[in-house]
Image (cartoon, rainbow, N blue to C red; front, side, top):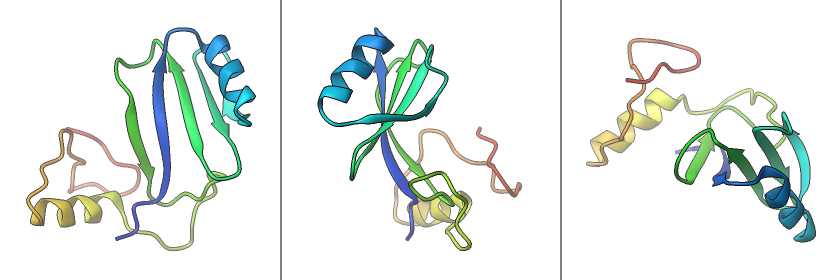
Length: 107
């Protein structure tokens, strides 16, 4: 199954200090609003730094996007990925509404 572009989303207390730390590790900002979140990349990894937006860290898969957030011509829809995972006994914490199409609504 094609899960999509992978990134780690980190809940941080100080966005500017976190961004400066990751810049020292070779990451550069490629997106975000600079006040609440920043998307950073190096040659092989993508991380999102999020201040005050959620409590814990999150592993993120973006079906349909490449590393530059461009839409792919073919990809596995999140609802299909969800069906496959559920068939293998994995229960999502939050489920996409399978009666919809396009970007998912969550229940």
